[in-house]
Image (cartoon, rainbow, N blue to C red; front, side, top):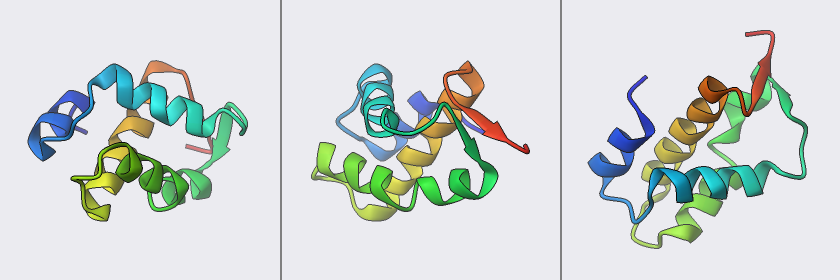
Amino acid sequence: MASLQFFIDNICANFTVESLSDLVKSTLAAGPDTISVEAYRRLAKSDLARAVADGDRTLDIKSAQTLAEAAVESLVVSGDLAVQGS
């Protein structure tokens, strides 16, 4: 998967990698550090995408979903979020 910075630049979002990662972390803070594969797949299409869209009102929902997905993947790669059964 391409880097989070690539997606931010490509979509012309008003986020930095740090600000988007912080937004995702704060949105996920109430949940566990490990999520199921099913929850991982649904994640970018739910509350997280809406939070990203709310953070940058210029984004359509599909762009917000793409950024949310990339941000979650970035957290998985960095070890900040684990996916059970992957």
